[in-house]
Image (cartoon, rainbow, N blue to C red; front, side, top):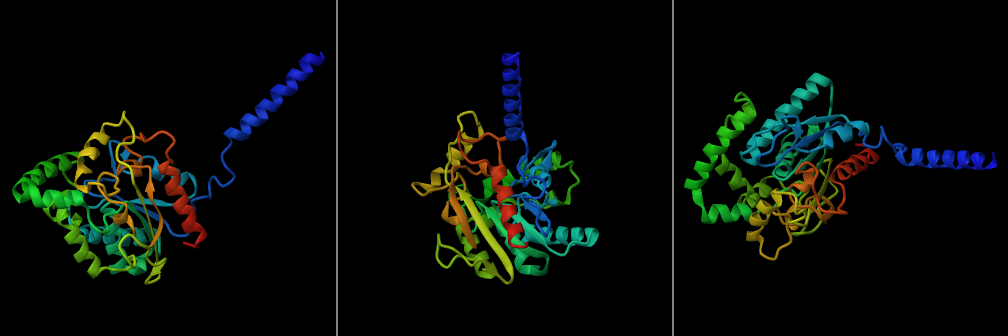
Length: 311
């Protein structure tokens, strides 16, 4: 009997420990509950959701489970920063009018960064913060290489092909792909294009290249982060493509499409996560390097930071 009693006590203890390990953290449900809703802004050739798969894979649902109200922007996948930014502003205005929202926290990846910055500069009353992940704030050497060595003829041919594919993906009726212009996008993504854009919209700019920017500009908080790895998972077929697109960077630290320094804007949280450009949005379908940080957790931690800032 004593043996059975001891076994029952041991089993009960194991169950208690297992339950504690399996139970959600104490902050679940409110950890990402920001004052203002979060808007996720995709990058070049991005989308909000295709066939039920989010551009920010697994991020929206996780943020919502932790208390955040989340909107997902859909701007033109291949256009200039300004064109995409105007589309974003119109979506913010529509959501604000429909849902009674006063401001938004913009969290953006890649070209979504300058897109969000444009919205913040032109319509600051709608924006509480801008958080960017591996954004093309100072351009991309990959875009520079394409513009210098491949040229407009190839770009226009690619543009026609991409526009056709995107119209099929989006059902052929989305206004966000009706004016796809890869040439305009690559111009914005180039170093020269970024320099011109930054001169017009400098809010949050670092005081020096690869340095820190102000925590706030025009009353809007700015945060940035980025990845510093390229080939992160042998089973991820997208790594091979990023290996090719990283070649123009030479020895400069990058994530396959954006250098670590180009990701800097506002308060720099970290610029060398062990992620490549797709790991940063938890793709391909969550594949990333072994023992690397979870991108979904990163977005939740950024939301928690905004929450603690009263945003």
